[in-house]
Length: 157
Image (cartoon, rainbow, N blue to C red; front, side, top):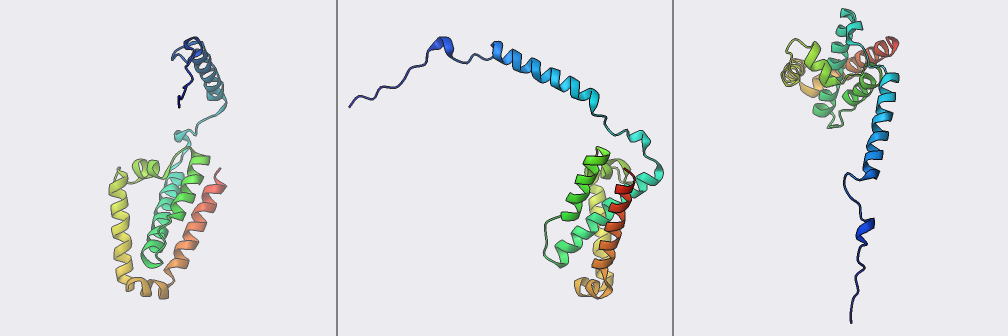
């Protein structure tokens, strides 16, 4: 039994850097240049001190809510931080990590996260752990703070 494999016609083979690739790169550059003029990036200089404080508060409460859910409800989703990140990216052209790096006093996102986590765990311990936090209504408090921060961010668009 003979198996015949088709051979490639060398004249039609793809050549890197050939005319097709140059045309594709040219089109991509043209589209990119035209879009760069129409999409205005958020100007960070327009943020007031109140805006910066609101961003910090929103990140802190989202982080605390996600910590509470992970610690006391076995919910590792990180839903509040993800939703905040979507809001920041779409309206402020920044991420939660940008806020942690630029507007938190620690100046580095890992240090800020460690501090927020330690503060939350201290608060949780003072309340008597997860049962005490549940009795104290911590989940409802965090939810109302998160909703208020998200509404304030949406109002500043």
